[in-house]
Image 1 (tube, rainbow, N blue to C red):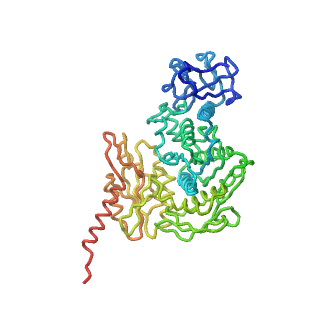
Image 2: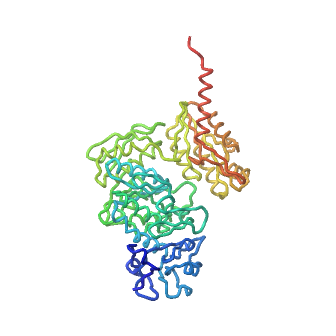
Image 3: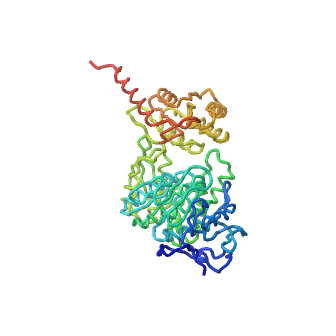
Length: 540
């Protein structure tokens, strides 16, 4: 057996894995098995002695850099087609992405087999459902890690994705990141498909094990599954919130994403739980994808036909109150999140907890413990008599969902401050404007991050997509646009400031300036209330 080590004497104790065991269908050139102790899919960040995995995507083909990787000290290569320049140092596989993920998980010690690993997927609500599940497990006394679009946690500290445990990322297409556990990842892949990447995920899960986490919750997108980032990860349970077609998304892309989500449920270990939304027929089908998993259902439309259900008692700007059914007794939950859809996401998390036999008191405490989701309909409350929300939505689907949630609660008109990003395609802007026109009563167009694009072109693209431009006001200055929307609001109205969320800057072609939607809204509301108090009639 050949060993792909280079001067290994100073590094005794480093784990190594057999590629024949991991890739039994591969074609081995030169010997029947190779043992590796490190790998990367980035030829520019390769350490001597690592194996280079040649991954292909629309921006990068690792096969073009096999010779460079060998010159930098690669012990060998994993490729999808024979490469003459690699000589007798290559393993030929059908899918290099899958091979890379499998190697990364094995080098990390297969951490998902030592954690209660739980997956959350769906078209809408993945992020908040992941937070609900994490909060429930912690309320039950379990140290729980998390990997999601907002960051990752080892159960004690939350960090942005791409930070910590030796992992770094940099913007731009193509290769550009390295990860711990002897594995590397590419920033282009991480940014376009999933924030953690295959190597980053392996390193994060291994760190959770090192920090004595009992469980890990992973927010799983269809893109991550398509990119095979989760190959080698074993799940004890998975939940799907829904599988709708996002506003403005072509049906063929939605169907592809739906097929990708089915892959998560095939990864559930025998005896694990497949938690599905019975109110969504497309999501419910996923419960039959893995016949070795237990099907658990939740929903609100037909409470007697599901395992876990809820009945809404109150919806308002402060949150919602609902009665949770399905456990050994019913319980009232006072949810602090906004809109009726969040109740469904809370019930999804509760159903997963029900499948794991978690106590109802911990479920209630966990659901009530989630106060807000960063960049998702966050409230600005300075005592005004109308609702103000800030959301990071930059495309049609999340914008329409945000406006729908506001419409369900607002007693008066819905105002929307709308912006589009520089360098977005016109189709994205068109559907963004259509969603705003459909969901809001009044719209103010402004600038987000124009970047190198002419600001007037962005505003023209948005304005041209409105069927009734008379309901639209154009104010390029974002501060003035926010203030104008707040000035127009009347008691019972709701204002959505969309496009930036917690981003604290604006990017122009020649400068980057500090800009905080929250600070602007708070300052205006405080000034407005001070003015009202000053001129309010005094009682005798």
